[in-house]
Image (cartoon, rainbow, N blue to C red):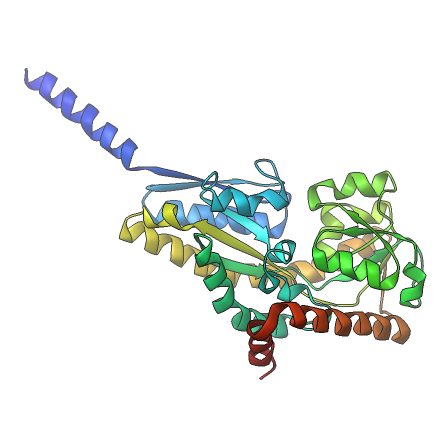
Length: 321
């Protein structure tokens, strides 16, 4: 009898331990080897450890669970409890999401962090209205132009098939006379191999991920902007956690943000070295190209402020203080 009672107690305790464990899915759009994805895995491991195994987060890299444009909606609708999004992808939904995709508004890590501090309260407010919270955000390395030919001025991009992955990159194509083609990161290698894309703006990191050096030979290091990936969480899913687990998530997120920005800086240097080692020319843009792209940035900032209204103006003013 005692043995039976002990056995029942053991079964009940295993059952309650299992029921106490929460599992989250976290879809992401970039390859598992990308520094953002590696940071996500570390974040998930930190949460697992700090929560004593109460919260298990599975990272689904390389758009394997949801494609990049679908991730935000999946988190908002509760199909995934958390997710990583490229903020600029959602500028059409709210101009605030596109602030870090404006060419030459913030063109260094220091200025990108300053812009993030000005943008963050507005992001948190907007996501809150949509039933989500911001856990952390990490900048990509500075963006340059990949091309298969020498570019002396923006006019050299006229008619070129240009990868657009956000409203801002599509608008750049229009302003320089290129032909925009919507291609997400997970489809980029194929698009380059088949000639669907001949030029695009992105970081050195994306160039390495997609082996762009196998298809294009020039990288013009314009350092135009540093877009951010944001890790977001469904508010209902977060609110359902106990206080200690919530704290574990927030602490792991804060650590991931610091670690991610440091990794981005390291990756920037390493990526350009890798591109160079694989035969790509890393080119300092000519004064004419730099000037042309700066004009594109000025036009886009004015258009953005017109659409973003007083809230957007206040954010830019706070950033420029």
